[in-house]
Image (cartoon, rainbow, N blue to C red; front, side, top):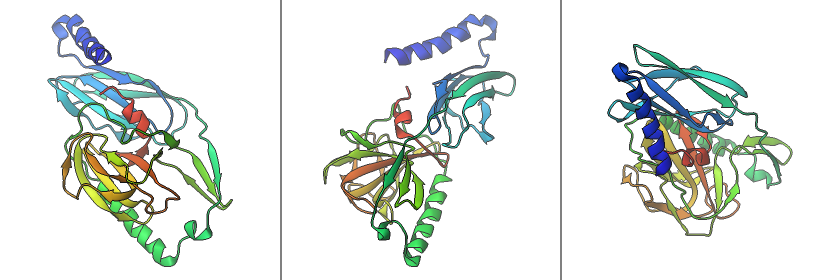
Amino acid sequence: MVTRFFHRFSLVLIVVLLGSQADALVAELRPSEIIPGDVFLIRVLASGTPSGEFKGGKIRFFMKGDDEYMALVPVPLDTEPGDYRITIKDGREARCLDLRVRRYEFPTERLTLPEEKVFLSPENQKRVEREYLMLQDLWDDVTERMWDGVFIQPVDTRLSEAFGIRRIINSKKTSIHRGIDYKGTMGEPVRAINSGRVVLADELFYGGKTVIIDHGTGLFSIYMHLSGFNVSKGQNVSKGHIIGFIGATGRATGPHLHLSVKLGGISVNPLSLMNLDL
């Protein structure tokens, strides 16, 4: 709470010091140093809706308060390390923000699984392709902001698998773990990490019983391998609402929760989102 007040106070203080230019554009970026797969936050005080770009993509700003705007910006996993300059404009003025993307070597994990869990039959391959296209349509839908404040953990257990791990399966197939896994016992409740609307509560090939929540502003949370649902499609949920229960459905080898986050159609580390001071 003190940190959040300090950030807000800092922005207001800068504007006050500008005296007659009280409507000047002021912008800050946090954190200023990240790794690929993370999310960063831009806060802006401006007289009009600001604009900006990062890696060729437009930054989506939303109003937080009087003349205050915010944006959550994803950093794709394939982002090259280095220094990036982001220019924020409000129609009359421009401010430059500097972001450093650090080099980070994600771990590699070698797995041995039954062949039928690695290579799909033609029928299952068609199902996976249909589900992929259906999900792509979801990520393209940008709604009004429904989330509010910091994002919370969906369960109280420890992580069992980190984001970004490179998996080599049966020495033949390579995949990237684009979410995080939590340890858990069968039937343990799973909570919504923030408020939003349920846009999917169904059984998918890979994810098994899966819940997807649209939090608005192009942000979605995905909860996989559930044993059962406690919500239905179209339902509005608040932060902390029990949306389902830990299970081992889909392509899971045991009970756990797989949590993914999509922002602007890009997979990001859920922990980086939860660490932001919103």
